[in-house]
Length: 223
Image (spheres, one colour):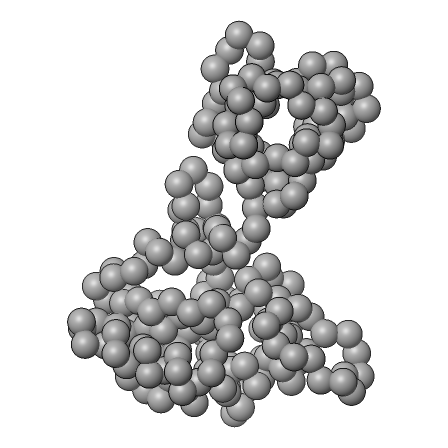
């Protein structure tokens, strides 16, 4: 349920956001505050890849940001940019955090966004957008892709065209051998080499198992 007033989301609600030929799952959650923070919801945040903190530009965004980050820290959820306390009783949960400043519905709101960034001392990535007008909403998926640190790679049979609609998704830094293992463990053990097309290589360049896959690479295996 959505409306122009707060607290309409009563339970975590999943949805999908497209980025080119892949999808990100977003989970719209009920708000958290000092008055009420559902432990089950905070446990959900501990298990996510990216925590997206949304604040309202027109309703004390600095206070909202500081309150939400404080609650996350109370539950040992920290962004990579945060300095960890020395006396943490248990291990922290390091999660990437993206701060989204909503209700930038007017051109002059850009100045308010810059003031928020300066006065809040925000260290995490920050995007200002308007859910009402759609301004900068497409940029959101681009930032999520960057923060996710993943690469999309494709495979093809010799003499055939690659299917560029259904990539394999790997963590950035994954090797050719790890891609082969994703397809089948035995396939990885028998792999001799591959030919690669795309970023960082000559078309059809022969590479070995330790080649680090790049986003958009097309791979032809030889076993």
